[in-house]
Length: 583
Image 1 (tube, rainbow, N blue to C red):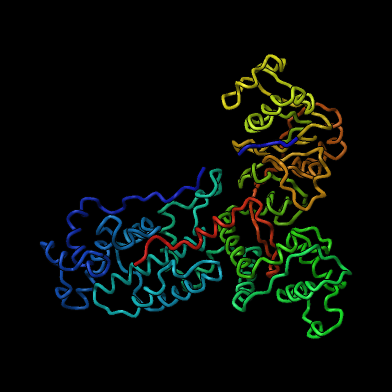
Image 2 (image 1 turned 60 degrees about the vertical axis):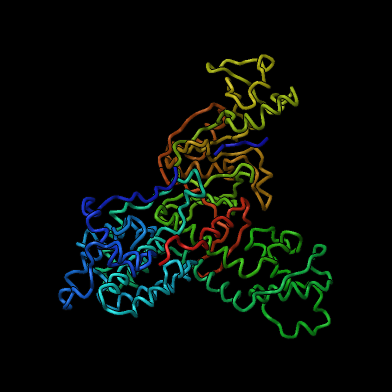
């Protein structure tokens, strides 16, 4: 029987009104006049006819006067049309306004060095899977090469600052708000507008803008490895990638098949098999030999497949993913890593949903790992940040509402023996048994069920012998399972949402962290008593449930996983969507 643990959005920018509201109406006409050519789509003739107090750059008769006027003109540009001018349509508009407010609207891009560094950094954003056009890089080049009249200075100033603010946001926190994709998202939100405005100021106080920007991205080996992998797969794609392996029956070591030539060429193109210029002319080129089988097994291991050397449907599908598609997959996972990097800690229990694996790190070092089973696509294991509250030994299972509604009630209506088969019983709010015959099962398909359906603890209980209770409000937790055979399967999207652990006992001892009171013998004795018992953990560590379909080590060696919940496409579409504001 499947168990379900049925599944706060990221705080988005709160735009404060940091300017003085009473000056907006007084300055709007003059600002629109001055910046009509720079930012406004309104025809110049219409502006000329509407302005009662024209502001002309000719009035700024000397460079000193022009410099003195720039703060006022920058302020007017920022607030000229409440969202249609300056950085008003930028995703970082509030940050930019507060940044200039704090510095008295004085210009910051007074030399060419920082401008050049910014443009270089924008071009280098490709190395992070980002898109330089999001930062209007072509308009920046034109503005930097433009004149030094007040209009050009203000336009250049705000274009550069807007580009910088957006670049900082994307490099440090990601382009996408993950709350748009996950209703359960509860990782650290973006810092508030004040903190981000101060961070912009700190960039200019650093000796080198490019060096300061480089420190904003995740600094761990996993992220750097993905960057190296992106570079390699992008280069492969630019060269045309590799050919596909034709469909057909499963290829096995020792067989002869014309498709073996395509298989060999495919693995050589990606570097899984050393190139052999003589292979094409050899009489045994169509033979599936030992060297080729070893390369296939390495490929299968890196793609989460059973490493048996047999090229069946799953392996063939992975082989025929193009280099360009793999590069896009890496971009998606670089973005995912930026979302969570701030929450990574030296002590961490990480559940990798697509790799069907969990690891406990203490002091930055792995001390425990286990195969896991996660939710099937119809009942996904959610992405969460959590912690273990306590352990439950010999846990009872109270059927959650989703399983009750979608599995148990329909099961009882189909078969009166359903409850007995799954060792379930019905109890009221006082814990007293209720006869299933007294329950109007057909009346509770969607309405609230007035009873609980529970399963007693025991060797065959759905939660096994140990439950790791988390703090989320979605009834998601980690637990033991009596279904041990499922861990022999390479793909383990089998549960109804919770995470089943192959090695719960070892994890329990590490979290209890009390060798005197909770050694192996004591834990085994407590379990053998068959008494349900809640035990607090001595070691509290964050728990991350992450969805990642590409992982890489420090060398750039990358492992790909199947997109079991079909989520990569939505992330890629948002990554590729142009930024809202264009000059």
